[in-house]
Length: 227
Image (tube, rainbow, N blue to C red; front, side, top):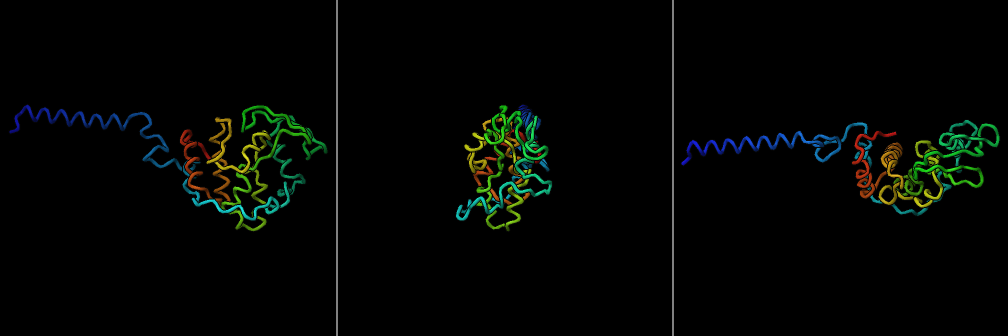
């Protein structure tokens, strides 16, 4: 038999339950973009990850650097090879061997992969121009089906190129986000966002492990925009 006291207890319990739900809903992070249960904000790298095709890695059979055209072609018609264009863009204190094009020396201030300063001297450089999405990685994820001109544009696209510390770049080799990330943790969100932008632009797919690795990085910076 329900007494007036029983009804009062039931009402109090219901009030407490409602209060608990309100606290949970208003707690910090409950509505944070990109968290579980909520879609990432449009235009962010985190949102763009889910627009990439997910497939297994194809065999590397047939890959050759030459399949992407002559190295460092002058694709923009400015009279300079792409490598020198990127060095001019990314180095400070640039000097030239010919007055305007061939970079003789300069300084890579705050190298994106290590956070250190690296000196560039032509012919004995400690600076590489890296393909953020490696050519052989792209080959195994769609590029082998492209025509030669598309591969040439991909290999010389400034969006996919960065001047970086050479030793670190060689340790990266042709790794994707699942197998290699920059030691400089402060650059990882920018790095992954750039990989996503390149892959989205050219229709390069990602593996499931690569997608998951990208999401783990971007979960720490859910508002990171695509470059």
